[in-house]
Length: 300
Image (cartoon, rainbow, N blue to C red; front, side):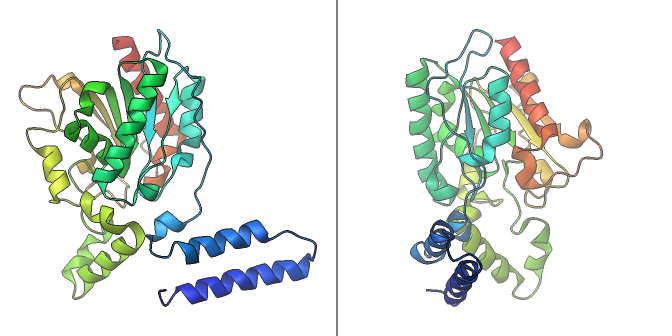
C-alpha cells in the first residue's frame, strides 16, 4: 500500500460516518464500497483505472447498417476512460441512423497498447459477424486512435476498415508531459513527469511518446494503410497532444490526397476553447464527426 492509500481510505470512511450521522437511515453502502474498492482492492492499478467511470453508453446488438449508413461505427475510448465517454457522440450518431458500438478494453486503456489492440480487434470481429457488415468505421479518441491504428497494421485490420476518424490522437507521438514538457529540462523535472505519467496511466502512457517503438512502427512505410480513408480532428489548445499538429496524418507521395482530411476545430469555430477530454462530447466536434461520416457515406 502506498503512503497515500491509508489517508484515502480514512477520508472515505470519515465521509461515510458523517453521512450516517446526518441520516441514520440512509444507505451509504454503495458509495463507501465503491471508494474502498477503488483505493484498496485495485491499488496496483494506475490511478485513471481506479477512478469511477463517467457517462453511460450501452451497446444495442440489434442495430444493423442500412443502405444509407452501410458500415457499423465502433467508438474506441482513450486512456483512463470507458465506453461511457461516448454518451453524447454515440447518441447523436444513432439519431443520424448509424449502428454504433463501443468496447471497454485494456483495464480502462491502461494495459499495453498491443494487448488493448488485440481486445479491440476481437470486439470488431464480433460487430462484423453480428451485423453482417464487411467493414466498419472507427472513431478513436487519444490513445484509442493509436490502439486502432496498431490493430489495423499489426493484425491486418485495415482490410476491415472503411474510414477512421481520429480525435486528438498522438499519431506521431506527443512530448512527455504535454505542455509541461519544458520541465524535462529542469533538474529532476523529467523524473517527476515520468513518475506522474506512470502513476496516472501506467506503461501505456510512455507508448504514446514521440520516438517510442510503437509510434515509430506506425510511421514505417507511411502513415496510411491500404484502402482506408481518414479524418483527423485536433485543437490548437490541447494540453496533452503536443505539439498539436502531431494529431494529423501525412499523405505519401503515391497516395491520393483526398484520403486524409486534417481538420482544426478552430477552422470553423475560431473562438472554441476545447479541452482534450472534451473532444468526445463537445457539440462542435460532434458536428464535425457527423459531417465527416455523412461525407464518407455519400462517397460509398
